[in-house]
Image 1 (cartoon, rainbow, N blue to C red):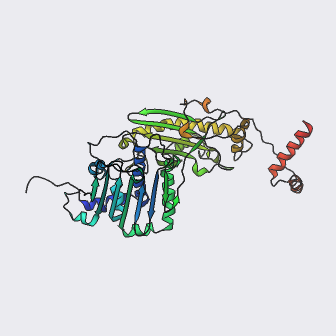
Image 2 (image 1 turned 180 degrees about the horizontal axis):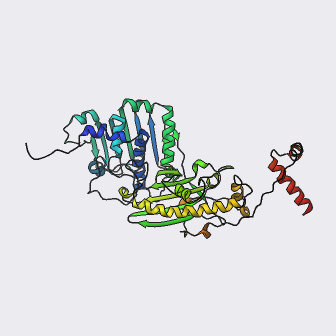
Image 3 (image 1 turned 180 degrees about the vertical axis):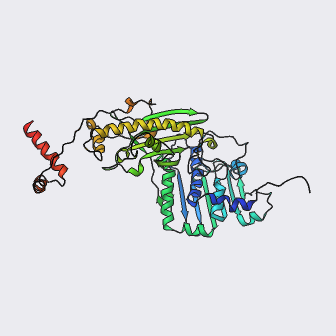
Length: 439
């Protein structure tokens, strides 16, 4: 016996334990992220029109195919299938979502026992087939895969460029989940929420012949109401914070959409947050009453963290949430709190000038000086705005309430004559009639 104490991992541990940290829908997002990273490497400034990611699954197989540039042969041989990210791998010129070098492998092992990968770039091509059960039988010191075939110095036509991954011999619980209509709905909603911004930029994502829709966020940007925008660099991370009031959807603001949205390299990691994770609970603690009143349903805050070093971004290992201890995030959160106060004060100011505490704010915003709500894509807001209230100030008409009671039978009679349904409308119509007649 020598003096060596073995501490190397076993392949069984990786295959059987590490996959438990990720849900199936999260595993599918990992594979979509790889395709989107390929799109970022081939298209600049988020110009994704013409690119497509197709996903098909049932209880027998899972397939994802894209035309997003393919995996270069040298990357496949030296990096893409490594378990962990080697220190020698330098960050590229694009902002990717790959962090630790386990995402794709963890996703594939999560799903099944046999996978096949075929990828073509302009100059290279490879086929890799792996029987996981046979691979596990090999020595624990041998973690390598082998190409089934490969080619170099090629001149491949554009229509062949892309990657296709197929997983078969599915794990029993995965097969049952992939065969469920409820799971299909769930995964579609999850994809649209997590990578909806990339869909809005033009990349098409199709799941079982269903085309997904983008999930962009809009803010009002006109002469009356201006969004706040704050941009700065924190080390090797670019931070952009935007906040303001969203346009109405129909006649109302959906309260479930209010809150903060946080992206890391384009991946949504926090959506519509109204907890202490962001700033809402802090505001509640520093003011009277419950901060989330319907009056604030129009609030939207968006934070983008972008970096060529994804491991430095403030997200967790599954890229589904924030690392709340990250100094980068904590510094951004202070700015988010100040911005939230400004927008909240604006909404409070508008509310004071409405007839009712519980309604009317949407009408006030919509009718101010006859301006139209501009559904401005938040990424097109160019001006960097200082954090002072005049940037979101608004001129409103002062309102007062008028309250009086009349016999119900008379009010009901006036409803019929005026063609209205509520007592409030009776009061408004009779006021307008008297004003027009006497003033």
